[in-house]
Length: 412
Image 1 (tube, one colour):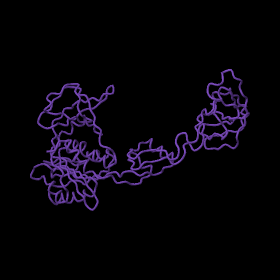
Image 2 (cartoon, rainbow, N blue to C red):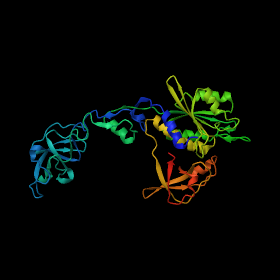
Image 3 (spheres, rainbow, N blue to C red):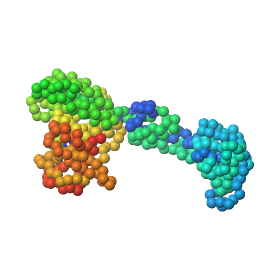
Image 4 (spheres, one colour):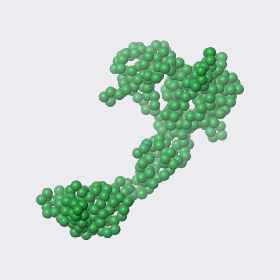
């Protein structure tokens, strides 16, 4: 039987290269770039004012910082023009003139600095004149030169970048209206079992609501993939065959239930008949031991198939351990990071399989903490309401003490 680590590696080895598509910038949030992006134009495209103030000519006597003292004689300059953002200058001031300018406006070509309005003597009642002290005339002050941020051909973003709002804004600033990204994986979900009814219905005698499908759909969405819900298949060859056939058109097919050793656990047999090659069946873990994984290749299309155990906590744990890393790689992202946390209280697990124990994860002074929550078995989904992750606890370790470090998996 595979260990969890061996099973994760076996899954990732079967993940195909992500497919790519061109999408609008407005659809690009959280998508992953498949190509490097380079700066297409100078930024800024013109010298711009960084402050509201007055631009003065380089012939006015500009100096480098520190060359003049506070008692230097002030200059009285004529204000010949006002420029706001979105306008362009119509004249160049000489050594006795200044241009009133607002933040973001283009600086006239022959101007060497912008003096902030709070550092001059200027009155709206006499807008034709401004008095500027010479120690404010520092060459280059408050001007962002052409190309100061970026030049044409500079690297902007690397392939593999998952686009966040700041990335989208930067792309828009450079006029890049569409990007080449990895396609979002399509994930079909097929619940199996004669006992299942839709979660909105009142179950009859011996039946239960289908909680796995909406839970998995939510997990799929947190993985930036597209869920496709196929409903419930009965424990019959005909019903399973139809559901599996529809699910194999997706990039990933998740089945819940029907993978253990019961007389109605028909999923592995039907998957084999549908042309799915089994990679492994069974993983040394609790919950989730009956996990089944295989792959189907058909005329260039690859579908990863996971037979998840029917108990809901098993499905939840198996998704986080095996399906989410596969979806990340299908989306063009690297594998999941490994996290560690400190146990906040003593705890012990029993049995012979590694236990993925629901825990509450929190942060304190930069340290991640894990507090185990009471949890009875793999059908106890209610216990997970009070958890936001799971911790790996080994029975052979014996009692864990408060303060011990354990490996954890945050849920989303």
